[in-house]
Amino acid sequence: MKRTLVPIPSWVSSALMLSVLSLTPLGVSGAQETGGATGPDSAVHTAPDDDRISLQSLIEELAARSPEIRAARERWEAAKAVVPQVQTLPDPRLQLGYQRMPMTDPLQGAMYGFGQEIPFPGKLSLKGEVAQHDAERLEQEFNATRLRLIASLKEAYFNLHYVHKSIEIVGKNKNVLMQFEKTAKARYSVGQAAQQDVFRAQVEISRVLDRLAVLDQQKESLHAAINRLVNRPPAGSLGTPEEIRTTILTIPLQELNQRADEFSPALLATAKSIDRSERSVSLAKRQYYPDFDVTALGLRNDRINDNGYQVMVGIKIPLFYETKQKEGVREARASLKGAREEFAATRQDLLFQVKDGFVQAQRAERLITILRDAIIPQATLGLQAAQAGYAVGKVDFLTLLNSLLILQDSQLELHGEMVNHEKALARLEAVTGGPLVGPLVERKPGS
Image (cartoon, rainbow, N blue to C red; front, side, top):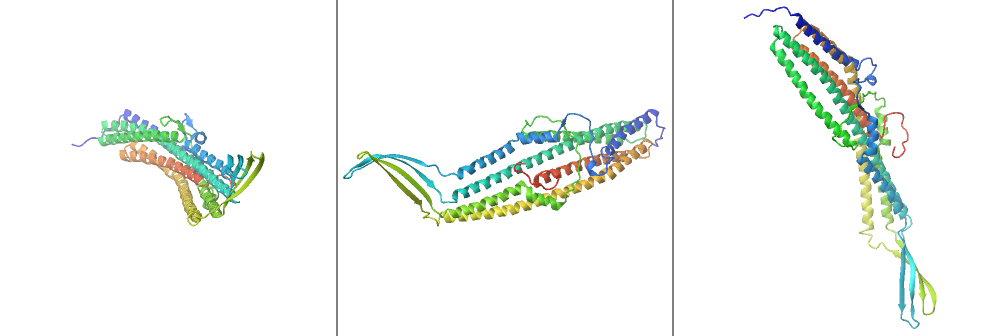
């Protein structure tokens, strides 16, 4: 049976125009959020004003409240307290006694005095140098822990920003798809569309609801991750992240490598381990030399009512040097070789991380430019053309739907690349010792 096409009633045309009007802000928003800029450094997200969580305030809270950072600081403080201990002479001995010796003229009376162990000259200073380098190593480990946790916090914060923007974009598209469904039903009721258009719109709405459920779960998980880092209850809620601005990475790769060599706490910590091991070798060699024990006693002879004294010097002989001192030197040398190999491995890993972060940042900058200046404007025009064509029956529903999904995916990809760019910079800051601003400067310990 042949179906006869009839003119579209006015109420159906009104429904189509409502769909076009409801779609237009979405297409424009993709361009407005990133339009009017001259480069990736000026791409800015826009979102309604609501309760914002500041990245800087979270970083300050992390530095003040993180148990891991505080534990690393206390290990550093404990190591600094070891230095004066090992540089100090052993505690002296106070000696009290009584003697009675049966002789022709018996000797009896009290004895009193003190004894002091004196290490061979140079041993205490070497022990102090070993402890000092150990404290400096723990200081750099504290700095590395702080930078690593800040980078983790930034990555979680930027991921949360992406989830919020995704919820915003997908939520807008849900409303548009609901208008699509109404339009498809209206056209189907007058024979201008197939029933599968209605079903396809309903399927896409269900997929959007599914995606929103996943995004909501990701948002809650990221809330828990950020709360854990700043030592808050994991179940606590957070607000919306502030809008982010991508900044072009202007530092060349060679300078980033130089910064990593000079300022990376992880690399400096292994360098301090080498210094410590070198002093340990010197100290182990010094153990071949004997230590001394000085004892001074005062003597009282009650029989003749007179006083005397006694001075003794003892020498600790390294008699078993083959199995003690010699093996100690061997141990220290092996530790030194291990520290040097660890330094080389750490440096190779850092240079890889620098190169990886650098190329990821560059890739993100290129994609941001392409998405913002080419793909999103083209997808917006494509959607507008599909809307106009569908309103007059020149474009099928699948083309209209694909145009919407292409624009949505492009907008999500743009926000994803902006977030990836900032995450790459956060990782670079962690491995190069601090913010990627300004020339190379000498940083104070703990800064």
